[in-house]
Figure 1 (cartoon, rainbow, N blue to C red):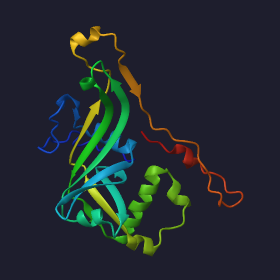
Figure 2 (cartoon, rainbow, N blue to C red; figure 1 turned 135 degrees about the vertical axis):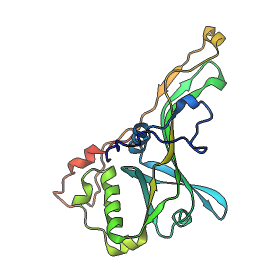
Figure 3 (cartoon, one colour; figure 1 turned 180 degrees about the vertical axis):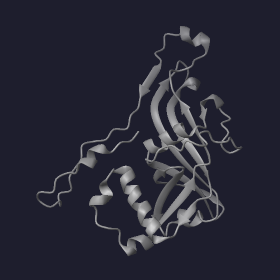
Figure 4 (cartoon, rainbow, N blue to C red; figure 1 turned 120 degrees about the vertical axis):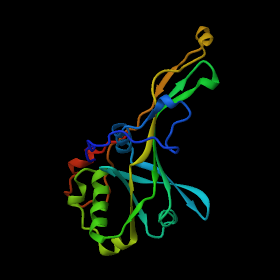
Amino acid sequence: MTEIDQANQTLNVTDRTRVRRYPERGRFDRETIYGILDAMPLCHVGYLIDDRPVVMPTVQWREGDHVYWHGSNGGRGLKAASGTQVCLTVSILDGFVLARSGMHHSANYRSVMVFGEPRRITEPAEKIEKLNNLVDALYPGRSAVLRPITDIEVKQSVVLSLPIEEASAKVRTGLPVDDEEDYELPIWAGVVPVTTQIGAPIPDPRNLDGVEMPGHVGEIRVG
């Protein structure tokens, strides 16, 4: 991913980004927000379709101070995003927090919400560039070894760009926090860590003879 811009390192807090529940977990610095976006490509985007909320999963990637996602030009969500506000969310589960009472059980997590009106990229050359950047964001260097994107694929694809200007992160780490008197109870408490693992690659049986797995397959990172 691209480096963090040196200017405007902390985002302004707005009514939509203010963390009301456990405000001490709120983060508004770009380093934290960008780190979470870069760590988890899977996101969920909330749209209003026919005046009803719809949340759709997709893959996002970040370039500088913008987050991008793409889909088919027939997709309901991408059509609904034109000229309207959306909310893009990324969440990472880091652990189950087991306390001494049910109400104090929790989870360790990292999450980001980005609000705003996305821009639809229409210029074909820019769209091709962004689609190749999507590939390289997930699999560094892979776009260089692939066949070029066709004109038909460009026409069938929609790429949206959302500035990261109204956003916040929320992060919980650490051990359970129980009522003081509950620490005297003979009940086990602690944290069960959760990690996302990259498994061993499974080759396509239709790979041509002699085609070796490229090195960038081993560079995929998530979590």
